[in-house]
Image (cartoon, rainbow, N blue to C red):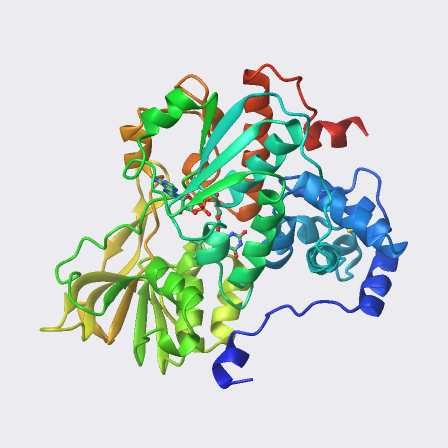
Length: 442
Ligand SMILES: Cc1cc2nc3c(=O)[nH]c(=O)nc-3n(C[C@H](O)[C@H](O)[C@H](O)COP(=O)(O)OP(=O)(O)OC[C@H]3O[C@@H](n4cnc5c(N)ncnc54)[C@H](O)[C@@H]3O)c2cc1C
Ligand code: SF4
C-alpha cells in the first residue's frame, strides 16, 4: 500500500464475524428503542442486531435496506454520534454505545458481497415516474416506487449514479465503488438510468412533466457560494467540492494540492476539504473562519479528526482580499470578535480595527456553503411548500438536499421514501404505512 493509499484508508475498518457477534450480544434489544427513534429513517436497530446475533445476515440487511435504501452508505458516513449511537441507552450507564454503524455495515456488506436480491419489483401499475437526480434521495425514491410496481426512469447529469455518495463523501469514509454497488441494487430492481443527461439542458423539464405521470426533483444543492471579495478569480482559488470530486474520480497522485492550503468556511465540507488536502500531502492546511469555535457548523467529531490530522484553525478571521499577481499567494484578513446582540438577539460580529494581516497560501478553497439549487427550481416553475415533498406543480415532488437546503444522506433517504409514498398516492396507489408509523404502532 502506498503512503497516499494508507492516508485514505477506511477510517472505521469493518468488524469481523467474531467481533460482530460479540457486539450484537451487548445490545439490550430495547422496547421503544431510542436508537430507532433517533434515526431519520427509523431503521429497526434492535431487530437487525438480533438477526446478526442469530446468524441471519440476509434478514438483517433486509430490515436495514427496507427502512433505508442507503443503509449501506449510511453505515459508513452517518453522523451516528448525534443520531442512533448518540441515543443508545448504554450512554446513560457511562458505557460505550453499541457500534450500530459497524454492525449495519457488517450486514449490508454481506448483502452487497453476495449480490443478494433482497426485494422484488411490484406488479406493474402502468404508471411511469421520472426522477431527476440519482443521489441518495432519487435512488431511495426509485427503490420504493419499483417495489410498488411503477416504472421509473432516473436522469442524472453525472456519468455514474450515486450523487454526493459517489462524488462528495470523504474518501476515507466511503469510496465510489461502495456508492455504485448500492446504486446498482436499486437499478437492478428495474429502474432505467439515463446518466450524463442534464435536465434543463439536454432534456426540457416541461417535456418530462408532460411525458411522465409524476416527476421527482432530487437535484441536490447548487455550487459553492462565492467569497465575494476581490481577487477570487485568481488561479489557485478553487471550489472545495470540485477539489473533492477530482480526488474521488482520479488516482490520488493526480489531484493537485498546494503546499500551503487555506480553506474558507467551517462546515463539514470545509473539514472534509482541509483533512483531505492534508492527507494528500499539503505541508500546512488551515481553516479560516470568521466566527469562533463555538459557532462552527461542523460536527465536533469532524473537528477533532481535522485537528488529529494536523490541520490548523484560524477563528475570528474575516477574509477581505485574495492576494497574488498571476496566482494566489495569500489571503488578506481582519480579526473579528463577538459584539453586542443584534435585532435577532444573537451576538453580532464586529471587526477589530487595525487588525489587517495576510495568511499565506498557494491554494485557497471556498467552502462557504451551497444554495438550494434555486435556479433549477425557478426555471422549472417549482415552489417548495414548507418542507413538504409535494411541490406547487401538479404531480411534481421534491426530495433531498434541494428540499432541506442541505442535510445528511439519511435525511435524503427519508425524503426519498416519503416522496415515493406521496407519488404512489397521487397515482392512485394504496397508502403505505411509513416506517415511523410502523415504529409508533409496534
Ligand atoms: C463534501 C460533502 C461531504 C458530505 N459528507 C457527508 C457525510 O459524511 N455523511 C452524510 O450523511 N452526509 C454527508 N454529506 C451530505 C450528503 O452527501 C447529502 O445530504 C446527500 O448526498 C443529499 O442527497 P441528494 O440526493 O439530495 O443530493 P445529491 O447527492 O447532491 O444528488 C443530486 C444528484 O442530482 C444530479 N443533478 C443535479 N442537477 C441535475 C440536473 N439538472 N439534471 C440531472 N441531474 C441533476 C446530480 O448529478 C446528483 O447526482 C456531505 C455533503 C458534502 C457536500
Ligand atoms: S438503544 Fe442501544 S442497547 Fe437499546 S436497542 Fe438500541 S443499540 Fe441496542
